Image 1 (cartoon, rainbow, N blue to C red):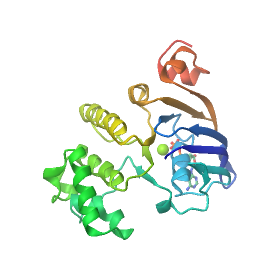
Image 2: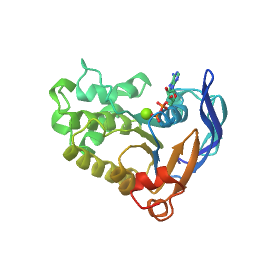
Image 3: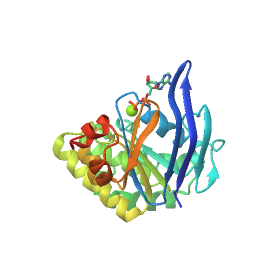
Image 4: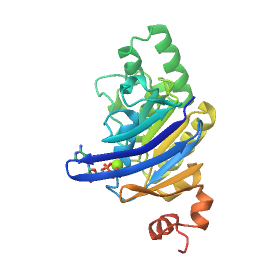
Amino acid sequence: MGSLQLKSVRKSFGPVDVLKGIDLDVKDGEFVIFVGPSGCGKSTLLRIIAGLEDATSGNILIDGAEVSAVPPAKRGIAMVFQSYALYPHLSVKDNMGLGLKQAGTPKAQIEERTKKASAMLSLEKYLDRRPAELSGGQRQRVAIGRAIVREPKLFLFDEPLSNLDAALRVNTRLEIARLHRELKATMIYVTHDQVEAMTLADKIVVLDGGVIQQVGSPMELYNRPANLFVAGFIGSPA
Ligand code: ADP
Ligand code: MG
């Protein structure tokens, strides 16, 4: 119900080989963190999983089925970006429900799911507001709500907290951890932040140079960093 397998996934932009063969197994319900230097291809890999970008070669399997030919809306995936990408002219409620509406979901079901998601995110009081009338943290919660209402098997987060100030980052991180427990969905999450990686992850995947340098639990990476990048990121002596 939300497992993911990547098999020899490669991606080139013209002559530039960004991903040089990514193999990865994500189990149903796992919280997996991607880390790696800026420009190493983390966002590209998320976009390939979501179907927003095609891999140059390789296989992507969700729950055992190859999805390379499946359009993004049919993959059972929802993505949350660093910039909230909300529609300024739509209310919170309509921003959250827009994807469902476009997919032809009955109105009553949209209402019900929007209500449930807004309760999970303490957004009930803000449903009729426009994004401009919300704080940054509230806007990011709307973006997360927009993902939740689609009831995806797999959530992809691309540095979702990096636009928030320190206090809000902590709150929103704890909220995402709680949502992971409640929804029991698989989550793949890109971050630069060591604390986010160490506290949220079941498994951390370190990308660099177009390949996976190391995969392991936070403690495994802490105790046995495979290289200086990992050691520096985790903050343990190499
Ligand atoms: P990260 O998210 O790890 O910072 P990205 O996945 O955004 O890295 O980018 C990886 C590399 O691919 C970068 O060198 C970037 O410039 C390049 N890249 C990403 N998208 C495109 C694109 N659409 N066209 C050309 N190059 C791209
Ligand atoms: Mg990125």
